[in-house]
Image (tube, rainbow, N blue to C red):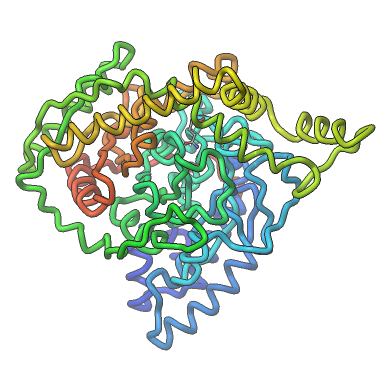
Length: 495
Ligand code: GLN
């Protein structure tokens, strides 16, 4: 019993190994997390707790562990972003328009995790329909970062996967699922001192994940270590006939790729990522990252991604355009909440006007505009051309290098309400991450240091399509060199 609280300090890999060595039971491990989650309401990371679910599954895992019949993730408690449909468990994408929608089906990614023996602690907060960079657009209210300034100022955990990043930084789960359309796994990971991996487009099935922008959306894990990300991805990835963009390729054992040997690897440093507004300490950390990788035997090469400056403008045409189509289904007839009106048009208008928050409405208006007659050619088709050029930039760069190293974000975690008044400023958060989605590539953020205020900063590695093994191998070397061990304190617990 006494060790109960310590169990939440384990990494996913340590917990897995401890369960197999019978150092503790899945029931004990799960109870420790259930108790900690129950005391975490101040953070607002979990918008729904499912303790019975978790504890029942833990009993079944203990039976399997006892019979030496453990599956890869047997008995390991996880949090699930509320964008993933979970059978019989409320799923809302943190939007009022979904009301109390309770899906009769399970997303493929979570199905894979449960089939491998993992169990669910609950559903995690996110920006409404994953639109945002601070988790402040959620219908359930903002989620707080467990990291604060020394003066005790409340900070955002990043977004849209802010619940996932806050939960893992605060040890409210061994790992969390998340999604990334323009940076929503990597940016929140960077702002909370956690590891966030966005796999190659098509590596994980999007089936059963609430759609935002289908040609950009990709699921991935947020974890405390690179090893844990590798373990999670091995279970999450795979082909699925119900998502025709998921790729039918063997899923490697990503953990086995972590050899620690990156000698001879060429790391490209794109000069266009040296933006004017970048704080000096982020610039310095980036240089430090290059030195760490060079010391480990890699070669650093300068590369150019000339169309980088068009990435955010193109993204803010393409993502809203796809969102306006995907979100047309929320009409008060098929899902969730309905507001009655004088006639059917009035019912649609009221349902959508009251059900969607301000940021989502802004995106739907931009997207509908960009797709309308006369503007389609001027905006949408141009944005698609830019997207192609950005992908070509990466292809050209990869003739000279194997991976790219960049900062993950242009700043550390910021105070609540900061970006709300100026949406454009909020959009700049993704300046280093969004190119990766446009090109469909894998990227990972690794905690690499603290800023002058004692807040975490991340470095991003970008890989080639389906190059996750190489990406994770280099990320682990970077993680080891950085030796990031700072932790936020438990100011938020209400036990
Ligand atoms: N912050 C970006 C946006 O608001 C990206 C979000 C995401 O990756 N889901 O669209």
